[in-house]
Image (cartoon, rainbow, N blue to C red; front, side, top):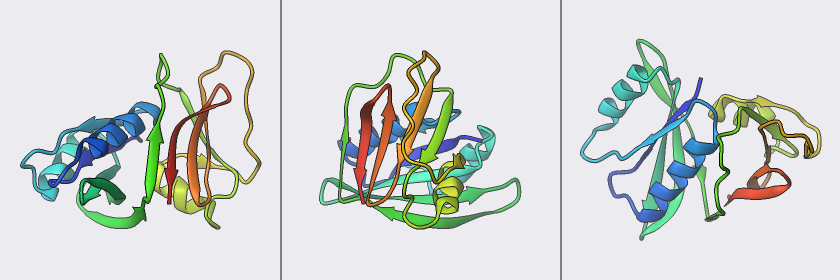
Length: 159
């Protein structure tokens, strides 16, 4: 499925950094600079790329403030959720993109919410770290979303 990430028109460096990091971590996802594209232009590009989710990383006062998610189909689109972000951090990204993306832990009360936003399967269990060499990305959600690979946090979002 994948997610098409763009920064808001009033972008900041951190929005691009976060959008790039999330698109790198989420299988079949991509980040592009928005430039002068309207939301309709972004939706069209999302369709062209075969993605079903559009995620606009927003900035306020030069800081990332949230991500607006839209569900995109062949003939329509609609906003489905705005996730407010109070802070985030990105460590060095992995050498290769993960092939598997699993949502785990306490997912803000409703695992289907995050599954719907990111297009991943959710599970209620605690974080599972896999010691073999498979490309696994586990996400622990609650008031903080942590993207974890090989036992270390790659991206952390405080909601």
